[in-house]
Length: 308
Ligand code: NAD
Image (cartoon, rainbow, N blue to C red; front, top):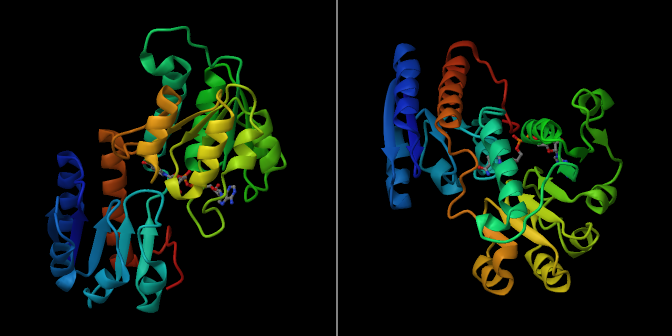
């Protein structure tokens, strides 16, 4: 049984050692394909793989077709929009993510981004404080909950919206106010932290109307995905409302234009870095390896995200 770790952006060394220990300890073979420059390398490497661990690497229908023995793909991370679920399901391949393993890293980045923008991106001038401001959390999942709790600890009023969390206790336990519509969430949030997954329903769903409904001086913080933003609407909102700010961990397709037009009011990290901590790397990598061993040894499909 061969487990391939294919990572264009490799795991930290310690994480790779841990993955090796788990995989080889279970009696399987580990293969590594790191920093590959061309997709052909990935296509060649999956040819004899039974299991695949990836990070943000794209597992397309072409990759799946090139892997006749493949039985399981684990995306070490939360979002799995980089895996072609339909192609995997069509072949009976199980796809899993590792929910929660990198959430704290992303949540800390979201908080850092709020403060960075409140303090004029650490350039001279009078900034503002986040204490006492309203923080809106759009989607109260693993990352959203941690951002909510950190916001409370920093003295913010925290409100949240998630139509799929039906138990009001989930919000109440964190001292977070649950709002009943996405419109209300944006209308009251000085800082809006985005945590919705990229799905056909959410793609392009955050645009002009929501952004221009935000309070004066509001900041949209995006550590989710660029696809959820209607970039034309964002551009229009930033043009009309000179007080709005946008900070993102996933550069927009139109980022150079945003930077040029809006200067210090926008900021994008050079490369997606939400999960780029030693701790998150290790947690997600080890979880992926354990999930693969659990699948092969006990048939455990907890964390499966597709219908195989
Ligand atoms: P999660 O699955 O724990 O939570 C997602 C939440 O979104 C769930 O509570 C779900 O109910 C809610 N949701 C789904 N559709 C919604 C909708 N239409 N409106 C409102 N809520 C909706 O995921 P998570 O771990 O919190 O991660 C959230 C997203 O953050 C991921 O999907 C991923 O795209 C992104 N992410 C980015 C990085 C990074 O490096 N920047 C790292 C991890 C995750």
